[in-house]
Length: 360
Image 1 (cartoon, rainbow, N blue to C red):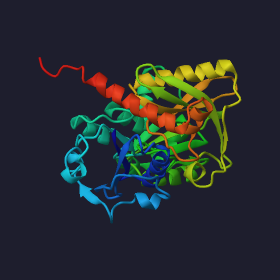
Image 2: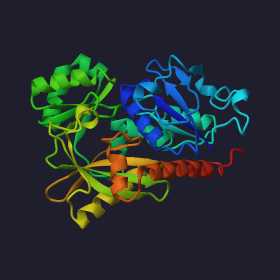
Image 3: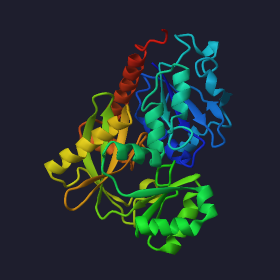
């Protein structure tokens, strides 16, 4: 089976994508899959590497800019496989696995390209990827669906530049302190700051606007941070629940990907009733934006048992410190088996879409 791995990307989460790609390659059965790496540089250039016959040892091996072949994104099923390298079968991918995090990859752009090229792919489709990436749109949809979540407000850079003090005053009136300021279209805790006063809020806005033209501000919640992994298409299933206990003020980029000091409790110490409640909201959230394949759903669990949706991640990381594979491992699905199931779910969704009529 010809499997294309898309990783890297023109995104502030480029390095995270490389770590994900390394971990997935190390877990893939290279005797079962014909694995072809396609690296997207930080400038947006697509570079094809040689077929992988052994796992990579470090992420630097995945930077193919110097020893790869530049290719066009719109020719994934032609110039990717030159005739001399394609003696044994079809010149097309059986499936593509986008291991991209953040804008220009996790946000529906690459998924739209693959849809137009009619190539099967792993994970969420255009709508769910786009809505899941934009935290404002996601929360608006969840509000409409009646899913409980922390109070929030949002701003465009243009409006902030016109009257920053009015924005700060509105945040103080609506949300108070502490609050969290985030780029609307980014993940991996990049650009996120906790604000405890007006000066901290001003700095948090400045940092967030470096990464997006739109920011979202959320009220601080006094509750436990818990996460659950979801797997499936139309009938999704859930993993056990995990709890995050960061040593720092919150679960930031460094805690997620660099120091490994954050306490990850799997399974979380919760009641069966709390688990059922979290599972129910996770599935509702998955279906509300028509997700497919995989999602990590993040919640706040308050002392009174109330569950508040924080956000979903439509392409969660697969690094050694990542919750998604760890949650499934605790649920009885090992890493290689998890990847295999994701591939099959992608093929299943593609087959389902082929039933749609395109003539009238």
